[in-house]
Image (cartoon, rainbow, N blue to C red; front, side):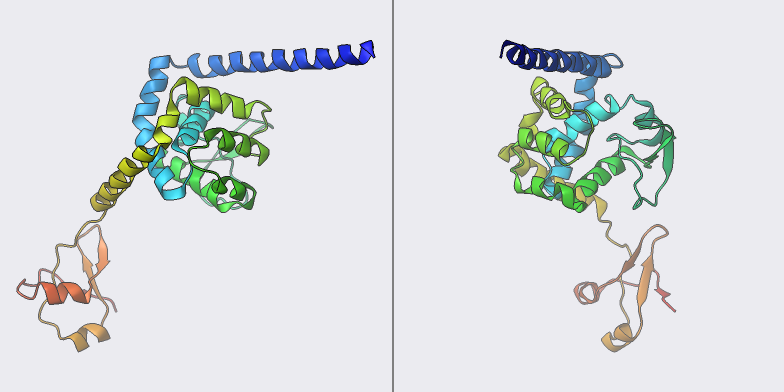
Length: 251
C-alpha cells in the first residue's frame, strides 16, 4: 500500500516537473529568439489578421495568435522566414502548392510554403474548418479559448502533451483573450467590410450603345489591364449617359 502510494506520488511529482520544464522550454523558445517587446510587436502586427479569420471562420483570434506565436517563435523560426508558414502545417496529400523540407518529428519532412503571411493564416483557418476531426471545436464559443486549446490537442493538432497549457499561458500572459470579445467582433465586422470594400475595384469601363438583346447574346469582358470583370445589366441601366471607354468581346 505504501509502495503504491509512493508510486502515484512519484508520478505526480514527475508530471509536475515535466510540466515546469516544458514551460521553461516554452519561455526559451519564444523569448530566446525575441524579447517580450518582440512578442507584443508580433501581436500588434498580426492581430487584425487573426480577428479577420475569427469573423470569417469562427476560430478565436486569441487561439490563432497563440498558435502562430508558439509555432513560429513570433515569425523568427526558419520555417516562418523561409516559407511564411507560421503554424507549422505540413503538406499532407491534399496540398498542391509550394513546399519546403525541414526535419521535425522525422527527418526532412514536407511543409507548406506560402507567398505571404496572410496566406498562412487563411490556410490555417481552412485547415481546421475543412477537417472532420476538428468539427466539434466549432460548437464551442469563440470566447472559450481554453476549450479550443484542449480541443486542438485532443483532435491531434500537436504531439506535445502540454500543447494546450502552452497556448493558454501565451493567451493569458499577453491578454490575447481581449480579441475574442463581443465588442471586438463588432469592430472586426466593420473592419471586414472595409477590407472587402478596399479589395473590390470598380471597373472604369461603362457600357452604352448596346441593346439588351445584343448584350444577352454576347459575353462582354471589361479589361483594365489587371482586372477582368463581367459587366452587369444594372450598370448599363444606371449609367446610360456615360461613353464607352473600351470593349473586348469574349469569343
